[in-house]
Image (tube, rainbow, N blue to C red):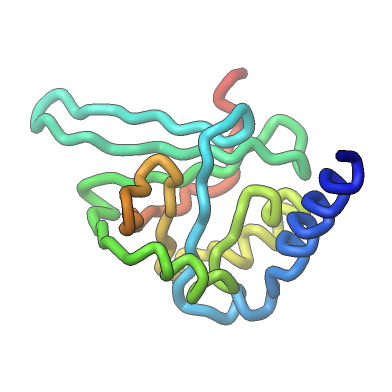
Length: 149
């Protein structure tokens, strides 16, 4: 059992480290993979006047004490949504950044990867259907103080 856990951990770790920083940095589009947890938070809000929902996503970072990275999918400044087949995940795996990958980087490197000149889409694991995934165009709002303070 211990060997199995060790092998799985090695494969997972290799995947995190295999992400090519330069390839992601030079790409015009980046995909952020989100899986809700204690360190990856999602808040859905509704506007009162026009009954529209919008999403705020937070990655609680280890690199900077008491800080998080905020992403927003909002109808007024990032309304784009598109659907892809699940095979998209394999095709674009080099351009998909995970929470684990971002926590290995300094905040300066994270900002380099996710600068405002890029198209950034969020892949929320909760938005998976049978054979499709939903990609939400998001705005990177940057490094903000933790929301629990």
